[in-house]
Length: 183
Image 1 (tube, rainbow, N blue to C red):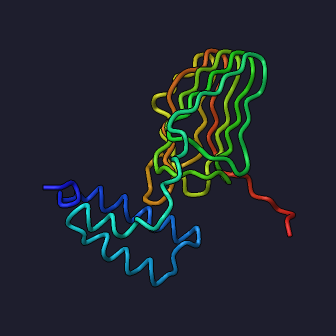
Image 2 (image 1 turned 180 degrees about the horizontal axis):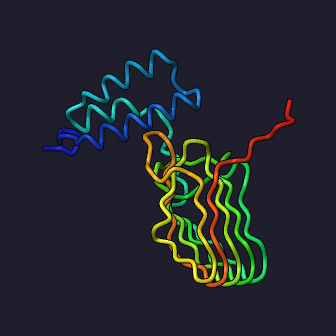
C-alpha cells in the first residue's frame, strides 16, 4: 500500500482546509475554487485525495515562532501596534518595565502564554476587546495584580495565561483606553 492510499485523520483534513483558506486570502484561489476544494478536503479519505487539492499551491509559509524570549537589564521592553504574538512569550527584566499591547497585534493562537520574570519593574498588558486573562499563576512580591479584563475564555477571542513573578513590581492587565477626540 502506498502512502497516498493511507487514510487521513481529522487533523490532516483540518490542516489542508487551513492551507486552502490561506491560499484564498493570498488571492491564489477564487471563492468558488475555495468552496469546491474545501468540500473535497473535509470529505477526503486518503492522502492522495488531499494531495490533489493542494499540489498547485506553494509550500506552507513557516508559522510564527512558537516561543520568543525578551530580555532587558535596565531598559523598557515594549511591543505595540502591528506585531506577531508568539504562542509562548517569556519576558525577563531586571530594572525596567514591560508593556505588551496586544490590542492591534496579529495573534494566530487562541491561547497565549506569557511568563514574566520581573525584579524591580512592573508589567502592563493590554488585550484586544473581548480578550480574557488568567493571572492565577503570577506571584507579585511587594506589588499587586490588577486585572480589569474577563477571566473566562470566550470562543474566538484571545485568552492570555500569565505566569511568573515580580519581586518589587506589579502587573496590570486591561483593555485599550477609549479615545474621546478621534475623527
